[in-house]
Image (cartoon, rainbow, N blue to C red):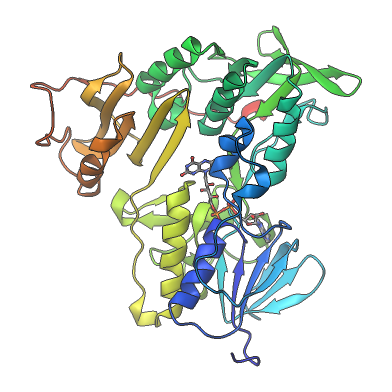
Amino acid sequence: MDGQRPGLVVVGASLAGLRGAEALRDGGYDGALTVVGDEPHRPYDRPPLSKHVLAGELPAEATRLPQLTRLRARWRLGQPAVALDRERRELRLADGTTLPYEKLLIATGARARPWPGAGADLAGIFTIRTLEDARDLRSALALRPGRVLIVGAGLIGCEAASCCRDLGLTVTLVDPNPTPLARLLGTAIGGTLAARMRDSGVDLRPNTKVLAFSGDAGRVRRAHLAGGAEIATDLVVIALGATRDTGWLAAAGLVADPGGLTCDAACRVLTATGEPDPAIYAAGDVARWPNPLTGGRLVTVEHRGNAVDQARHAAANMLAPATGQIPYGHLPSFWSSQFGLNIKLAGLTAGADALAVVHGTRASRRFLAVYGRAGRTIAALSFDQARWLPAYAEAVAAGAAFPPILGATDRPRIETLAPGWPGPRRLEAHHA
Ligand SMILES: Cc1cc2nc3c(=O)[nH]c(=O)nc-3n(C[C@H](O)[C@H](O)[C@H](O)COP(=O)(O)OP(=O)(O)OC[C@H]3O[C@@H](n4cnc5c(N)ncnc54)[C@H](O)[C@@H]3O)c2cc1C
């Protein structure tokens, strides 16, 4: 190794940071490599936190990610990067030290959006993003709180509701939208999930906004709703999504905000003047890039598969010459297990103007549906029908006509319906 040269630096020691660092070594890089992370832990996996860890099936500490390559890296853990000086090619860390880099991979991901309203300081209010979050929430659930309230029926809120019902706890789930997962899947599919949740005993309250919490002796006891009603509670899970961790880049002259860090197609970060910085790349939840598979639209993808693929792609470009930069195309996909259902999505549903159930039925809760926009297939969703998904994912990647008629279809005529999107998100303090 060459001890004289500053070497390569990765900021963010989680999934994208780890897989990116491994890819640098696998790609033949033999110089100095430093991984900076603000958490005190070696990289661990987040998806189990809202599933097996909450359920008590897996200790939070057992989520550590396997290291797939000998990294020979210098780890700077428990040490946030607080500033970036691009001219000097230096990172500043919280302890005041500076870290020079030849090339930098930014993989600082996202943070759980905290409760923004009154009552945020009360005990008994939790979010789920970190190992500590999951461990603390699991310990609190093991004490069997009488009434659990979950605020936000996105993926993590729904998974938490499912775990709490499996534990036999009384669960209320509130969301300002008409159904769970309304922004991700639309209300037509969200209605199917709502029925499943109610069958499982969740007190689902759609079209409901929490304005504030209040408590007794410093512990949360009540949620105050818009319209004046209250919900009594002993434990609250806030599941309002995540904001990208870009605050430390405020003075770096990049296009960065809580919605993401903008990159070019090759994953190089864009400067305020719109040029890529050839020494800095980004990957994972934090990155916003023009994805060729979604028509070159700027997208951020908060799913595990993208963190791995994009980090590997960015690392390969970091090692390649300026003339050899390859655009990153990725078909977003995720899975979720909740209420005994295995839900998988390939593609992005945003802007869909039609939905077709092409296998099974919504009533049976076993089906495969496709989303279309302007006559093209843009996403495929399976509820316990995953065996059909790869074929439809290929149709999505190919931008096939909507609805795609694949040989396997078991229907003579495919019925199309409206996905049902809720109105624009209102940036109110209680649901920013
Ligand atoms: C509870 C939960 C359940 C999930 N379930 C699923 C699922 O079922 N399927 C799926 O596809 N995806 C799921 N996801 C999403 C998936 O976990 C993320 O897409 C993935 O973790 C993104 O990895 P990342 O490395 O880009 O970002 P992150 O995992 O957010 O990691 C970023 C790291 O950078 C650190 N960092 C931030 N700022 C700084 C700084 N200034 N200096 C140093 N370090 C910094 C952070 O502390 C963190 O350790 C889930 C996420 C959560 C939270």
